[in-house]
Length: 142
Image (cartoon, rainbow, N blue to C red):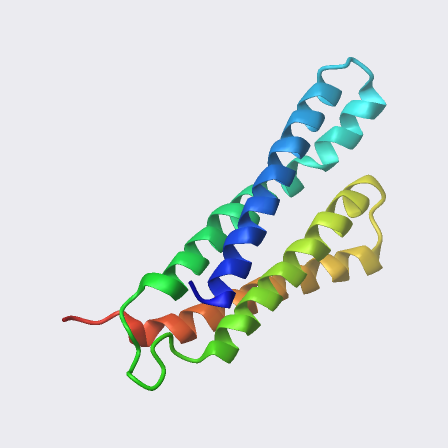
C-alpha cells in the first residue's frame, strides 16, 4: 500500500472517530435542556458533518482511488504523486480550519473568522481539484 494511501486511510479513521465523538457530545448537550449549552452544541453541528463527510468518507475514497485505480502509465502508475500529496494537505488544512473556526464564527460572528471560513472552503476545493487532476487520466477503458 502506498504511503499516501496510508495517510489518507489513517486520517479518515481519525476523523471518523472524532465525528462520532462530536456527534454524541453535541446530541447530549442539545438534549440537556440549557438553551445556552444547546446553542453551543448547535454551532458544532456543521463541524460534525464536515468531519464525517470530508474527513472520513472523502478521504477514505481518495485513499482507495489513489491505491486501486488503473495505472496512469508504467513510469507513473499512480499519476503525479505530488498532486496526490497536495490534495491530502489542502483537504486536511481546509478541514481543520473549518473545524476550528466555524463554531467560533457561529457563536460570535466576525469578519476575520468569515474570511478564515472562506479560506477553508477554498483549500478544500483546491484539494478536490488536485485529486481530480491526478485521477482523471486513470479513468479509461481497458
